[in-house]
Length: 514
Image (tube, rainbow, N blue to C red):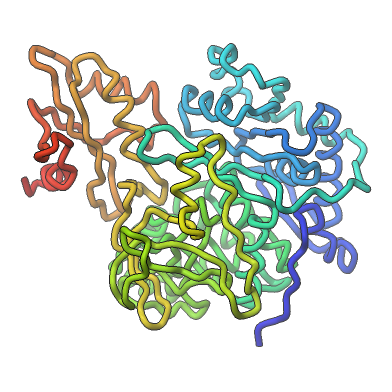
């Protein structure tokens, strides 16, 4: 029987239930140490005090470029207790990309690893709002020696609380604005619908700088009264070691690691404690599902989600039952509507844009609230929220049993190893290189990664630019996973009658069909 669940009002109260009943229960495990609920709650209160002493208050932006350790978890919770706005920035991004996010969010305080802070030095002049920079060692020691800040006025759960940066057709990232309420709802719904409790040991290896991962770690596990296990390794053997050592029961991993768990020398007994293995449904080949099940005796749980939701929209049932080609069933707080180009509902089973609205019935009726929009982006915000629904930009269908089938990505995103790469971001860098007239970036199917990033470049007449030089320029401006793995030089890109690049023809060309 699914337990009754009451959602907390704001993130600062998320540990209260267990602290009051079983404070020594394990809350968080990282490479460095273990934290009980009482210890973690105290550390988060000290973090709030440190941030407040640096002038951080409601609405201020706190940015973090930190590895998967307790430091980033504690900083996030400290910021939430003050009503600040969290800005997670991936360590894998190139310094120019990180600097753009800091400038765009107008971050006032940055927590970062020492190497990142040094690399950002040349961009410091463009970060006028950034008042405070602390490296992780200074942050840790300051928090350890601080006094807890308690008895704070509860923050407004409907105010901006986090920016989830995602890109689109402009080639520049934009930050989806989520409230504390928005960030709490997915964990509440998943806990309620899947029967999670104190025995939950949820393991995650993806970077906590991704706002969705904050939603799916302590914000989920603490609502269940369980334990969060933060992994610092992103390869199959390392993940398997974490799972075995910490007796992880639910793990969320990208397809490349799942692929390597199957094909590398990993003993199935290492994963014996797992009850659920989640992965993104849209890029999850059926062959990988079957081979993983054969080796480990456990079905992969398919999911579909996005930053703007935030996180999970649909998921396979806990027992691993799966419908071929689907990405799970829609969660109980969401009404998924499939709309045509005019915003009208399509018939059942027909393809259209996937849009989100609150459910009007069931235990979570009215709980879902859309994001507040995109940070300082009025036009994209209007498109995102047009017609009182959230437009995902993805195309799919909903079958008669509420299984969601993803058919395409309207925004042309390439999903490489579970990470989104937006062609416009890469094309912006390519097109700025002398000797390149135009470019088109797309994804090429890959058994391990799901897709690889590839580019076709139209070279200006007389240019002698080569593939190696192009790749070096990309590597200086982009995260490594965004750099095209294959670059094809062409005298002309295929275009349609309107003079626009024909992306269907480009995709066929890189696949060897053109």
